[in-house]
Image (cartoon, rainbow, N blue to C red; front, top):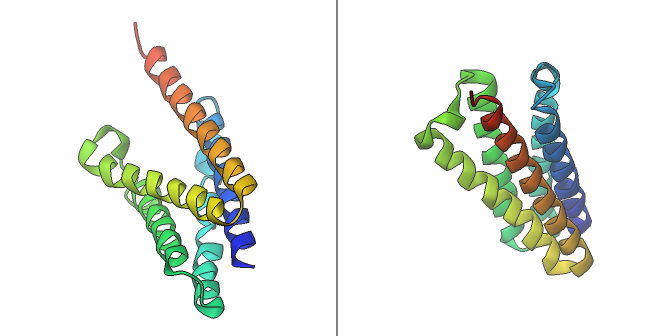
Length: 146
């Protein structure tokens, strides 16, 4: 059951992030109103840690879910509590990006471990996520040019 749970959580995470990256360019007002919904993924992630313990599964699941929770906590702190432009400050951005990539790595690897097809789906979604993220950042920088 944990493997399916992890796959679904990773799927929802990827879809959320792709959606967020797609709308942030032209719909920042919408994103500011509904972006907090993404943080609700902390609830199933915390439940997942309970499942790991209950099913006596490998500790790696708890570690990656913990990384995911740390990423969500940092996102919440930076964007919703402190409301700081951390993406322009490498000292604040570095731990955020480390958690972002570690979290995505975990969703790909832990799913791949039990399902080749599921792992390929997670990898494809992560690649799409990165492409959309980079392309919307690229658009931001080209729009500011004189």
